[in-house]
Image 1 (tube, rainbow, N blue to C red):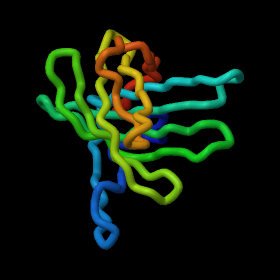
Image 2: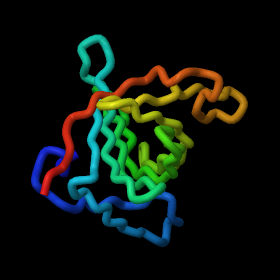
Image 3: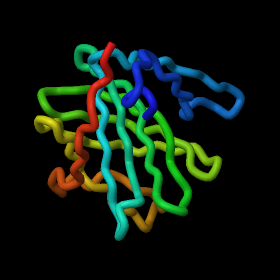
Image 4: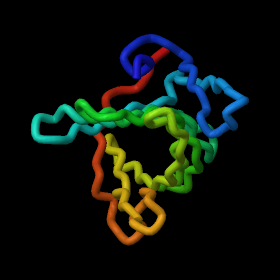
Length: 147
């Protein structure tokens, strides 16, 4: 999230959705249109999730990092579409050297980014968005990148 706290205009993100033999680096423009959000959780607020994205037209690109205290992190890219205040995105990330993706649903509400929570499917062993839940996970905006 260095771009959110510095004057940087671009952030390089490795796209982890490619095959093992191909590594693609995507440059996300983090100019004035970017927004940065943070969620802290846990007993001592040491678990954090940071999101930075830019919206061009109806397309969203950015990065999302889940950093639980003393546990394995997930770092990766966000790609999605925006319709009104709703964002449908795919988070492509690495965790313990394993590539994975999760579909996420967000809603922009002023200076908050709200997300439908994830739920675990015992049959597949994977997390997915709980479509029946409300937007109950709330991130606070930490600032906008300025030129």
